[in-house]
Length: 212
Image (cartoon, rainbow, N blue to C red):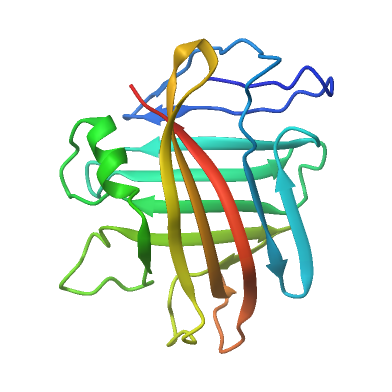
């Protein structure tokens, strides 16, 4: 488990890497005082402005690379407030470009490329049963989970675009895949889907995944 802390604000700002291969490998990462990139997700959800920025609040970010033998590799990045466990949690999920588990660095480079990402469906199409190269955002507010996965036809305004990517050598000389993206998503309640859409609009995010 890798944790990045911002000592300038004297808060434990967690940034955790968990690689799940039927088990979780954990390594503690020491704090750093300088050179920390700013990771965040910002936007307006259901007429509520959200700003989850790591580095000056109690917001924490968690990148997870999930390897499921029954599915494609998935890259997840979640934001939460460790001072408010019952507060809003936001998860950005990207399915690998390929059904095979390749070299992690290669998969990161080929999954995160500038351009539009397809929003995942609740029911995968026969043409893409593993939903390769798709994007999902989920937002948990108390016990209610909202998802961008398409259950009904989504309005044309829904999109996810990777604006740019870069490789950044950061703490302990670890290289991170930095991903800069923007999105507008019409979301539905995941547990009790109906015809009501909840808009997550004018959203921007910067996330990062450690490379090997």
